[in-house]
Length: 230
Image (cartoon, rainbow, N blue to C red; front, side):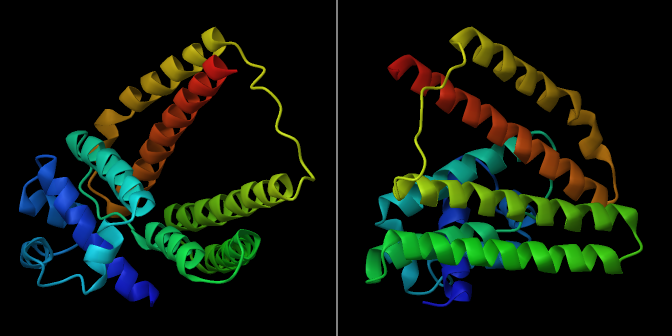
């Protein structure tokens, strides 16, 4: 299954989720970087390919799609117009399918993803050296930094699965985590007016910050849940 076909199916699933959450076809089109006609075709099943139903039956894939839909709807309510890049989401879905349908073990899947993250980091860093626009350079440097961080996290997961790394308790109180969650929420509110900026590169930078803050908030909530169970 090619990445392009997976990406098309992901667009179809995500378009349905966004419309189900109350976004119009035009809003969904702007957010996904598509035409309204293309979104309508995704919704009607005329686009997306034969993999839409297959992916829709996979609980892990749909959990990812739904969580991304929630993030995108929240961003749209804050004035973000998009488009958002779904390539990384499609890669994650591809990895899920590889785990399900391949004889390769989980460790092999993780190692392959680490390799892809490292390649992306190298390419993005090279692009950052080429461009003159400092805002565009910042975007490429962020992609490189994120990919390197992903590779580092995956390496730790690989070590954990191999018994080379032990996971201890959270070691942070619930009160401390709640304070951090409140700070993250406040930071999200503080940049709301910046969505009015007209430059698409500036909007992309603001969107990247917003999505990071949303991710941080969800991570903190997950840590709070783990702390209670511990």
